[in-house]
Image 1: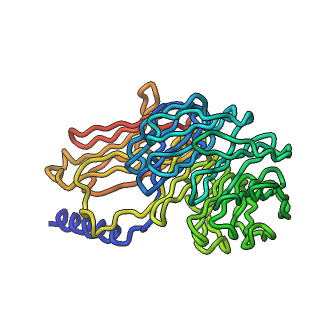
Image 2: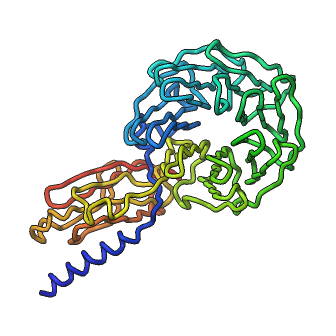
Amino acid sequence: MKRVLLYIILIFSFYILNSFAQTYGWIYIGSNIPGDSLFHDLSDVYFINDAEGWVTSSSHPEIYHTTDGGEMFEVQTTSFPCNAIWMLNENEGYAGGESGFVYRTTDGGTNWNAIGSMGATLTDMSFPFTGDTGYACGNSGAVFSINYAGVTNLNSGLGIAFKGLSSPSANNVWVCGSSSIYYYNGNTFTEQFSPTGTFNSIYFVNDMQGWIAGTDGIIARTTNGGTSWFVQANPDSDSLFDVFFLDENEGWSVGVNGSILRSSNGGSNWKIEGTGLTNNFLRAVHIPSLNTGYVAGNHKTLFKFGILPSVENEEVFPSKFSLSQNFPNPFNPSTKIRCTIPDNVILSEAKNLTTLKVYDVLGNEVAILINEYKPAGSYELEFNGNDLVSGVYFYQLRVGSFIQTKKMVLMK
């Protein structure tokens, strides 16, 4: 009788915890991208809606395409690695990077065809919200226009290594690099007064309102087309390498040491997001809607942010076994592992004995995370590899006849 009562209490507790679960959450989806190399750096991300998007690699001549929010990716190939991508719709888009090559697709990326080269490494690109002519920037002061016919040098006459570019409308282009911000009106480049700092990314939501981000966590905003910029308070000092705003209120910025910032009031207040997710260099962020966002970086780092399913839309207990990919991965020194046990295994205590163990590449057991009888439910465990050396490890879930093993990487 006591055992039955205890089980009822566990069921009720699990239901209550799920009823008040956090609405938003992070999911690591980098492991879904093909390839197993740690030296696999993701450079840019672009989603046309919550589910369909493309991710570029600066270390591989590949672009990764998903239509299901990152559950699966297909590999698309280019001649050289790319640093930037911009999709006009589900079919047409542009990408570019190494050696300044610009690629165009008209079939969703099944084929990427080179349409020209800027002659210098391409670092960023942007297309107006309406229109089919965009712009790209790069090293040695390179600023080019882009359309279906090819690329055209705008002859900036500047020697700056440009890092970021934004064009909210035709013939309105802002480009930044080093400690400078320039505005291009379709004819001439004009330097704008800028706050003290070194800038890596710029984004405008219209011809008046824009943001800039850079080293030592500097973020600044303009509301008059760059005539004046004012610095916004940042709770973190890590250098930032991308900034993106969905509208004049909702914005994100990412950078080194896994830094992720978010604002819901135009940057008047920034808060730190995703603490502890990763220490990797984050290079790109794209937010297709208020519901979903994607962050990409080095070592195949790719996170998805979104609304978690509510209890009203799912069963109180999981319907099948699952062992999720640990996150962050690679990790240093700790990571989290999630697993679920369905309610259809309440047969006998012998079949409910749950073990979750960690092994090294030689099959030696290095940690025991679970070794007890577990009721149906979802569990999250933290594994700390502080006493272990860098390398590949395996974690295995066993419940009765169910066995599942996954790989993780400790990088110190």
